[in-house]
Image 1 (tube, rainbow, N blue to C red):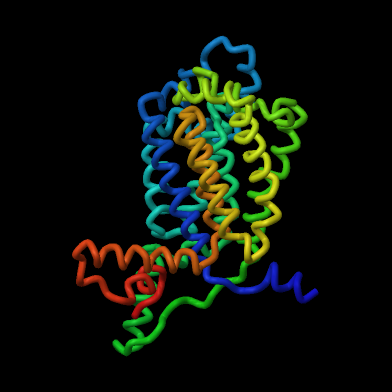
Image 2 (image 1 turned 180 degrees about the vertical axis):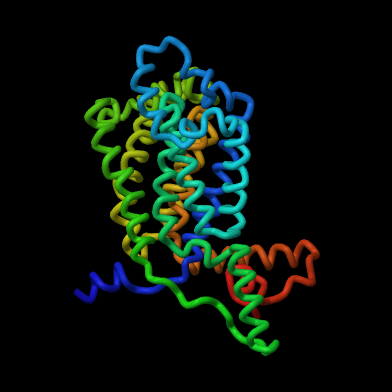
Length: 329
């Protein structure tokens, strides 16, 4: 029972969760920027959905559950793009974070329902993160809200120097977000084996690498054919091993940081080499950020501070990281 209570109802600094919030906001800024030229084609009333598609009836039925359908003729589809942009910026910088998170969740859900034929993995992953974010304290650190709150607390303290970090929140929502994220791996890996036996034989990544549609580093396909297939089998089985072990090893303190960095490296490599799934794999990197402990970010901040000083930035205060993450010196 004590272990159960510690897992769900302990308190922790939400900074790692705030890093995920920033990543979600940046991802949506990227999505909106990339889709801007085709925004009307994707989501307009007379865009893709007006074509004679065999799935048109089903797409129209789903579209009726979108706010964009309810506001057709009242708000232009271009106006919804600007709404998404403002909400994404507010989530990124942590301004009215909870309200912005709820708004971006509704916006994301409306886009998915408006035209499910253009939905990719990043919309679904970020929608899940945003849903739990509506109930979380991921705006308590690295945010404009935290800065404003601490300025007020400092003023109430009559200018006396004191730590005004807000009390650490309970982790139950954080844990739910983590479990839902890990289920992506736990469910997708058996499906890989069920749908494609090449994951078992070790040949799956060769076909990805050899494909002009997916891979952008064509010369590597020649290597996967050589050396008796050692390279392609190593790449395939190491991917399977990482995705299979991550949901388990991430809950052990000694292996949490190494396995999280490995899974992040895997997705960053995929994002670099396979442009068709870049945003989806980056959304997995963003989700993985909430598993890194606070000490990892503190050490990174100290490393950056030392690097800036070596680069000639001498006026950076010693307590800059403490102030940035949600406290005042």
